Length: 307
Image (cartoon, rainbow, N blue to C red; front, top):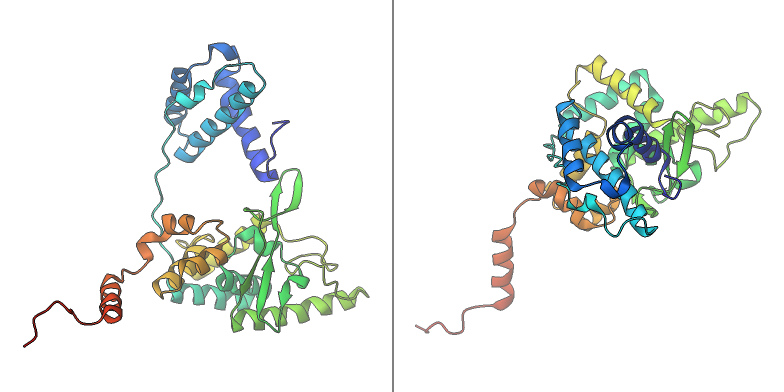
C-alpha cells in the first residue's frame, strides 16, 4: 500500500479488504509458502461467508498486486496468485429507466430541490459520472457554446473529500442540452444571490454544486445519492438507481444511431470497446442498411446476362 498509486476511495476500499479479509486469513502464512490453492480456498471461504462476487474479486486483485510487489523486490521468483482461479463477477443486467420516469424525477426535484434538479439536468445531458458532476466549477461551463469541460472528479472517504483527475485521467468537452443550460443559468442566479449576501463575488473557480456560500467545497458524492434516494421514495420510483442515468444516456443515444465514439466520449470511457462491451445489446442492428449501401455504391451486376 505504501508503493501503490491509488485514488482515495480505492485506497480506503483496499485497506478494508486487507484488514478484514486478507490478513485474518493469510497474515500468518509465510510468503514463500503461499500457493494458488491457498488463494482458491480463501475465495471459497469468502463466498461461503456471504461476500458478494465483486468483493471476492477485489480480494483477489489486492492479493495479486501485493504479491506482485514481492516479486519485483526479489522476495519470490514468481507470483503464485497468478495461478489461482480468478473469481467471476457476473455481469449485471442493464435496465435503463424510461424517459417518462426520468422526467418525473426531475420535475419533482424542480419543485422541491431545485439544486438537485439542476444536477440531474447536467447528468442527463452529459452521462458523466457522479463524482465528475460534483467536481464541475463555473469556469468549466461555456454558456455560449452550450458545453461543459470535465477534467476532475470528487471522491469522499472517512478521511475527507478529495478532488482528483477523472477516472481515465483525461479531459473532455461535452455539449449539453438547452434544458441543462437553462437550469445552470437559474442555479447561477441563486448562487450569485447567496454570494452577495456574504459580500462575496462569484468566483469562476468556485464549485457549481456546493453547500458552501463561498463555493469552495464541492458536494460529496454520497450526499447526491442520499438526495436521489429521497426523490425516488417520494415519486415511488425506487427501482431507478442514480447510476442508471448513465445507462439512460448511453442507451438512448446508441439506439438513436449516435456513433459509439461520441457516446464513449460523453461517458468518459477511454476506449470505445468498453462502451460496446457494456451496451452492445442496445446498438441497433443495421445489417440490411449495410447491404443496401454496398449495393448502391457497386451498381448493377455487370456479369448478369442482358435481355
